Length: 262
Image 1 (cartoon, one colour):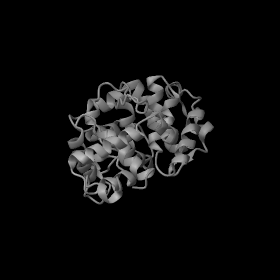
Image 2: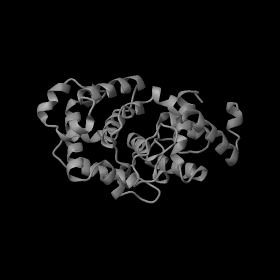
Image 3: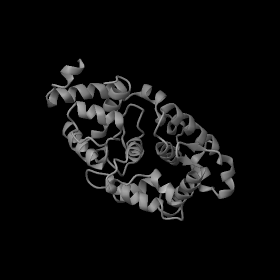
Image 4: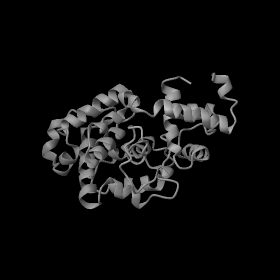
């Protein structure tokens, strides 16, 4: 289907078109060029969670750089993220004093490790916090409460910018991507589906420049900014196509934008 024809599709044609793109990109070949390859290094649930959360946190900018720094983070943690977090003290921080990814630096990383240790020791782990405040068809309030818990320890104010707050009209792209990784069971070996207390129907598409531009061209999204209001609009459109698994279309929108220059 050429570009002009794709803009004139009715709802059933659009769904068929996007479902076809999901099949094209939602397979193990996707892992090779995506940051999700980092948590795929592990099999222990907590290792996957922590690796996924940290890599999702730095997932902006050049994808090659994200993946390189993701591997570096895992090396720093001795390829055992959960064990490293649970035994972390600031004495360990010398080993990554030079770590930086764009504006995320070693001071931020030290706090993130402390916060993760606090979450696993005192709050029942990452899944428990997100599940506690999950709503029927949204995780955005849950993300807001997660951020409050994450930053309950003393920290530099600047570090807070590395976790978005949907209730302040952020699209929270990186955390929504992390939630897709943990919750969605795609039977294709890409997303993990290791969080059983949250359903795929509650997830939102990670909204970024690529997925936003494609969504607008396909009339799934009208709002120009990639913010929380745009995410809510895109949610509504994608749920009309598949209420049980709306976020699967992230593969289609992202693939069309990044790989096909749609």
